[in-house]
Each structure stands twice: as structure tokens, then as C-alpha cells.
Image 1 (tube, rainbow, N blue to C red):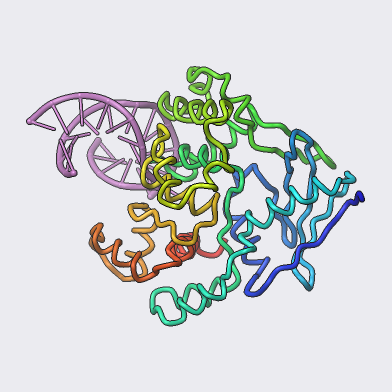
Image 2: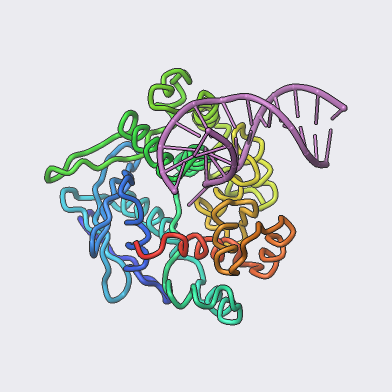
Length: 299
DNA sequence: TGCCAGGAATTGC
DNA sequence: GCAATTCATGGC
């Protein structure tokens, strides 16, 4: 059976407006177009580019394809993507209960109630974005990503708006690092990203392979990739695999947020941050995500 | 100006 | 193991 829309049932707590606010946080984002009550995204389903509009219903979400009729297989693909994107399979009520008794997190789960950990279901996108974001300002990272996507990503224009999908590893694997230099990638970032693309194209690395590993083995496999250290491995487990226990303990934004909420003027030590990780045990990734969210203010 | 950004690899001890 | 150095660029 073919159709042009389908619904996804969502369990509370879920607040689509909170998620939309998060998706609107940067003006330079190219991977989706977030509006007042919907977000549009170009889904690359095995090479077929499908534009989907995601909106809220009384039961959860509806994904409408204004220009396309999609197959059952394509629907399943998009549903899986959206479930991972908005972390819809997570028992966030348990996080909220834990946070109730934590004086640091309590105000955050109140303010952002129903916000899910918004991720990057595409492994190549998650890894590439993490590498791009290493040790540069966030605004410059968005600029680099936009140039990268607009240079190498598939796109489709609908009603005068151009929508972009993330570049495929097959495309990037063929590049030489020198080709990314004009986009202002450092040679090293270029090498890392092309290397990761090549591992994926060679079949040595895939989301499915990583998912089949136990958590510690997945972490080790990620660390074995050139350009991936502790921070990136934790970030990818958190944003691509929805691992609620992933904890990028050395993250600069995490430190900044903790410092702010604690009213500290001095730097937190690594041991102190480690203790916060233990305090958030089981929900390290959610605590981190909400702390990051608190840095943006009202988007 | 100088220092640091949602780090990681390499080198030297 | 672990500290120092290098990588590129923008923003404050």
C-alpha cells in the first residue's frame, strides 16, 4: 500500500514545541527547515529524495509528503529515522523522575519539559558533524557544515525552497583533502572526514555493525577511527545511538553550563565533572543535553 | 592582543 | 602513561 502521510504515536512526556525551538537554534542549519509549527526535512531513502513535513497531532506526530507517494518500505525507513531523530523510544519519564530530586536538573526539566534528545540518526552525518565541531566556535562549525552540504549533498527544490540531504560517504570517499581546503576545512579535519567516509564505503564501518556491539566495544571501535577521541565517541553514542548513559565528560559546553548553574567563577576539575556524571547515572546524556540547552537561552 | 572555542594526533620524556 | 605542541579560524 502506498500513501503520502503517516502518523507516529508518541508517549509522554513529549513537547514538539520544545523540540522545534531546539531545531531553530541556529540560522545556519541546512539539514532541516524548522518553522513555527512544523519542521521540513529531505529524507534520502536509498537515493530517493523525499521531502517530509513533520507536525504535531493529538496522539503524536504526523509526517506529510506533499509531493510524493511513498511505499511501505520507505515509510518504515522514515519512521525509524524520525523515532531516532526525536528519541521517541526513550523512557524520558524515568529521566524526569530522576531529575525531580536533583537540585541542579530540577529547574531544567521544568523549563524544557518534554524536550527530547535531538540526534543525528545518520552515522556519517553524526561523525562528520562531531569532527567539524572539534575545537572551533559553533558558528564557524555551522558555516563549514553548510559549505560541505551545499557542495556535496543531494538537494531538491520545492516551492522555491531548496532542501538538502547530507552528503553520502560514497561521494566524500573519493575526495582528496586538498579539495576541502577551499571550504576552510583544516587539512586534518579533511583527512579525518574522508577517512571515515572510506571506512564506511569499504564496508568496514556501519551503523548496523556498531549497534550490534556491546557498549564498551562500540566505544572502542569509535575510538579506533582517526579523528575520534573520547569526546567524539561519547557524542556519537549520545546523538546517533540514543545511549542515555553516554557522557562527554570533558566537553567545554558541559563545563560552561555546570559552572554557570553552580555560580562558580573557577574551572571545574575533571574529578568534579566525573562526580556529576555519577550523580546523573543512567541519564548522563540527557543531563548533558539539557545543560547544553540551557546555554542557548530562549531561541 | 591574546586566549579559547561543544578536541585529537603526534611527539618527547 | 602523560604533558607539550600543532592544527585553522573566528569571536570576544
